[in-house]
Image 1 (cartoon, rainbow over the protein chains, first blue to last red):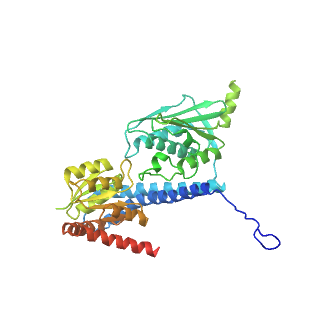
Image 2 (cartoon, each protein chain N blue to C red; image 1 turned 135 degrees about the vertical axis):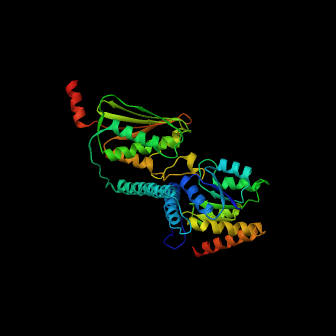
Image 3 (cartoon, rainbow over the protein chains, first blue to last red; image 1 turned 45 degrees about the vertical axis):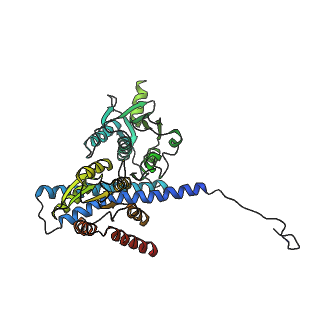
Length: 264
Length: 145
């Protein structure tokens, strides 16, 4: 600042704390690296087995050909899942995500997801426990989205718990909501991380500290967003070293809520 | 006959390497994580190690450091097999002592000729020349960016 005579009479300094922006930039950069890795891995199999099958100097047997083609198909599916994930994030960001709500039997979806996890190739010998009520348990939900949420939680439970550990999927009716829980015996989540766990690009510190990290850091962000889009909420109970329990609740299906009112 | 140890946590990628290397008359050993990769390398002394970087548990860079710091395994040439395509990641592999890197996705049919050529050059005492060439390639890539 200068006085009327033009001499310097003071200075103004403006400071802005950009550490938060830096953190976001770093997370975005980690995200691009993670997505690149996640896309390149299935692409390697698809491209590689196609090139292998195209070899004219080697005659593969029928069984081998089928194995190669099987990998091309399954890895293409894996790629599609990742692309769907990215699209979901874009839609959650813009609020364009469509959900088709209808009475959905949570027991059937939970059983399906657990069966798929048990059959998944490359499993680590986990025990799966289903804890479901005997009577129907209908939530007002989008069946495909519910399946996606549960599959993500079960996948995380397997990924973050020791080989041979137990993963429990439980569902129950609590007043006017259906509560679903996925529990593992894994490494748990420190309290300070629990607040950030549902944010976009976030991956656990235990993963990001080494380069073996896999995953895009989008799974829980999407699951949380999908639950919210269906009118529910998601949370986590966990202690470091003592496993995690991810839970969400969805509104009870209207007809189920009505029949409950009639019986009470 | 050349023996290649493939260390990668992805079963389909190990199979890809196996069928294409075996088709060229090589013997292939497999390991699905860093620890068993180290164990196999120490026990079997392969002629070359194809080493994935991002694996659960001990990652490829840690495995390479272990192999290169142990007199019993330090002469085995390491080729990194990596989905980390950034130049700095590739440079890190060569810097650690690797002789080459292959970025995923790659054409597995080209793997055997690459392995053969590298093994021949390393056995002919050209290990440092090979690594210098890789550094020069990377430097060029960096300058182009």
